Amino acid sequence: MENLNWIAVIIGTGVAFIVGWAWYSGKLFGKGWAAGSGVELGAAKSMPVGAMLAQVIALFLLALVVGVTAQTDALITAILAILAAAAFLVSSGSFAGKSGYALAVDAGYVVVAGVVMIVCQGIF
Image (cartoon, rainbow, N blue to C red; front, side):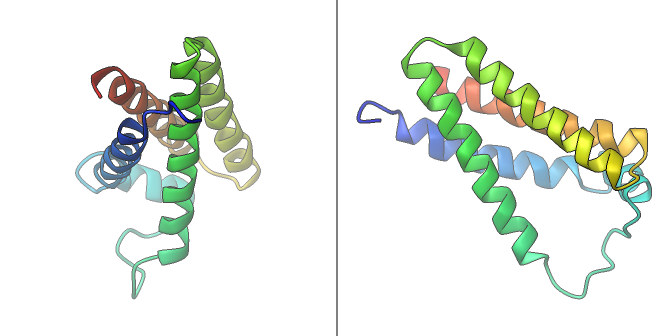
């Protein structure tokens, strides 16, 4: 981990979080996702701090996996980890009764976040 590109990991985490903010907004996929997830957008009295913190931690860990695989030229490993994370979301969301649309939004976000992280490794 001594040669890890920490700049790319941190920027990848931050950019992926911002992409998620837009991804789940009412302007993109948020309305359909909320309907398919059984939640109401904007109904919370305060920001869901616990969920947002868990999201940042998950994004950081995924960016770390991408960073480690970038060091060892094992891009396929990063891609498989990203797809595994997306599949876990689909699995748990299916048990929770989410719609197919909501499942696709969740899985799509993980894939897009992973692509952002891979691109950050290439740029920085």
